[in-house]
Length: 419
Image 1 (spheres, rainbow, N blue to C red):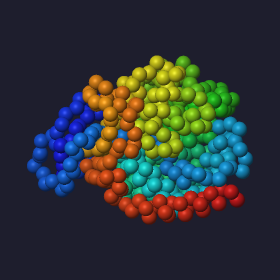
Image 2 (cartoon, one colour):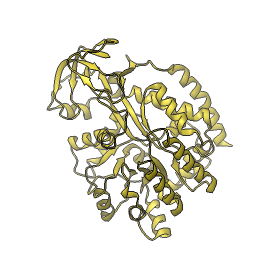
Image 3 (cartoon, one colour):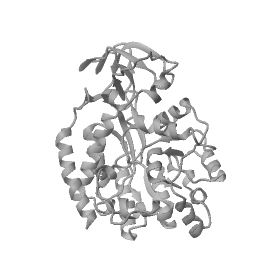
Image 4 (cartoon, helix red, strand yellow):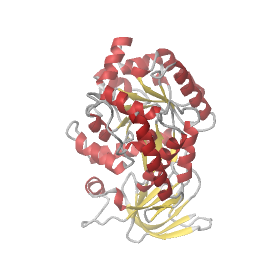
């Protein structure tokens, strides 16, 4: 059992602050205690002057994009989002091999740990190394110590064989692990594939994780080929009858679609930084209900930055305050708990050395969160009760060796993409 001495604990929901010792259970979905239970102390950390609170979780990530940072410009400069997918991301995912997937997952997990994010919901694609890809990612996340809820994005864009491999990979993985059934987006998923994916989700008692109306092109395609809008298509197909669905983006929805979502048990993930980068529009939660979470869409692994970007941009487009945006950041914990997914218990914590020139209290914590806190303040990360980062140094794997190897394979990937 890990012992945090002389900590200043901030409750993640009430923001109530108390100075206390904290005893951390090392089991999956373990608890924290403020008086010593009957258990041996394995390590003690002096947290005098440090803030301790629950770690973060990322509701929509893309491991496969990890080696893209700094890559060559595409052969053709995209003029819209559809071309961004065609000339950048669909070129990248087709060139991933097993080593690249492993290193992408390891480097992503390391980045998450350093940013105080101890659980990731990921949406993966690697069509030319599809079978076994989710196991590679799961093993890498487990090595670093990051909890996970994975899926493979099933799509028809690479032909029937690839579609069935995606379904097979999903079925095999979900037979052994918790996870979701991934779909890319409505405009690359045919009716038969949608029906088969719903059946697979029912078989494994889980939900669908899909990009929804990220760009207006998704709606235009759906209206042209299915004579309905994206949320209407998903509703009519029976997707919304499933539990634990995650719909990423949800930017270009009309009022009817927003009501469909708000009345369902499905959850929405906003990804503001990615949307701004791709120039696809601005997410607003208007008429979507309260089941809204935050993700990064593979842009980075920094949930503090994600929440701050979502707030600073979002307040220009909807009436949203600090409390509501912070609730969206923390809603992922509720999603995981309600749907009984493991790995995001109370024993996921961050310890921060916050050098504020002003007093921090329960009543002004959110002012500090949105205008003061940065990832550099995180000094220790505790995942499922285990110390995976101590004094900003990863303890579970050799970070330097992994990043060195990642750089080598990233260069190889970029060269393959340029051919």
